[in-house]
Length: 257
Image (cartoon, rainbow, N blue to C red; front, side, top):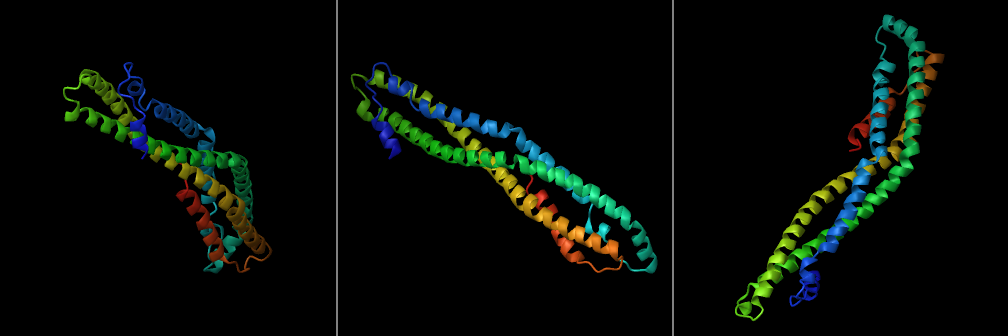
């Protein structure tokens, strides 16, 4: 239906070729505008900053593996050695958690901008898809008009040369629009990747930084406090390990592209 409306709006009898020379040019201008906004999202330094911070967070977490923080005691000698290393482990945990908290705060500070960028990316995706359909309609309309000019009904027409000149100009525009169509396909895939990345960034901040990270810190801190008061105090290592694995998995699976 869109292609039909476009076809009906083209005046092939125009001596100045106005409709043909500008055929689809407006949608190409829209394409350029959307592409510029997409590029601004790609180049925004906060996406790279979020990626860098997530990697720093992972590095600090990797120094606090549960099996190393709370080794299983199997012998009296191991128990004595572990009790001597307790203060050192507590100090290392304190230092690492301080760094982790700083990183988490930095991520929280840039989260509002990442959420805003996610909304922009979603809006651009919708506009990009509409534009893709419009370009396809122009291509269909243009090819129909070219085929119409080539029909036998135009042979011997008093203005056949005029129509064939229109056809040549229109084929040039069709070639340009076809290139735009290809660019739109690639651009949409890129934009979808950007949107997924920004969605991951928001999820990372909301789920990990605001909820799972503090929960893990609380569990480990409580275990360290218990062992400080009583080196033989039982701890729920499975719970700590499960929380730790969840943190590491979220970071490694949700890297910001």
